[in-house]
Amino acid sequence: MVLNFIDVVKKDLVTNAEPMSDSEYDRRYLLDLYADIAAIK
Image (cartoon, rainbow, N blue to C red; front, side, top):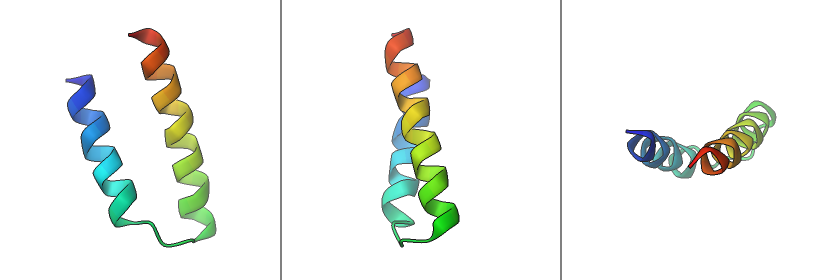
């Protein structure tokens, strides 16, 4: 379930890869989230 979520979000990040300030912030936040999820596993 967690891995599914990560796949969906990663796909979304790849699709919305335009360099916008808000997107950049969101991406950085989500990458931190990935790190937290990976640490939980």
